[in-house]
Length: 173
Image (tube, rainbow, N blue to C red; front, top):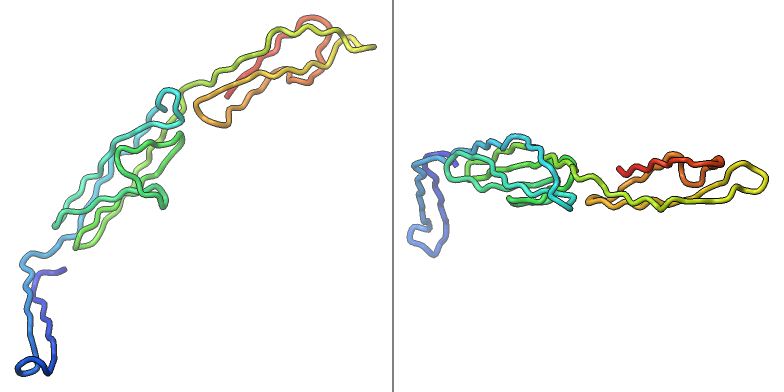
């Protein structure tokens, strides 16, 4: 609201002369807030987690004091917050009687904990009838702090292996 006077008149036949007048004076105007977000931040995931906790705050100025709200998309968050692996854009909003202001900052959480892979024991197999080798299947198992771990092997399970020793390299990502 701007500084100055505000008038209100109530008209009624129940009051002498049928009118009540009120005058309110605002001596100091409300000033819309300003806001400054923290810098973009990159951090590593917490041990055995697919996320990381971060404490943050935006700086505000204005009169009266601004109320701060934070959100990611439509989800309201508070500080500290447990951010998932990946990039999250936080929108900060400062609100007071004079208006509002917004800013944004990014929080990037990197998964720096490698997956753990367990390969099967060595496999010995007789050659398939009439050929100098065999189709061999195997299943390496991988676990990770984040979902969707992918295992690749070279040569792949279900491949034809020639007679002799073949080394299989399996990788989890």
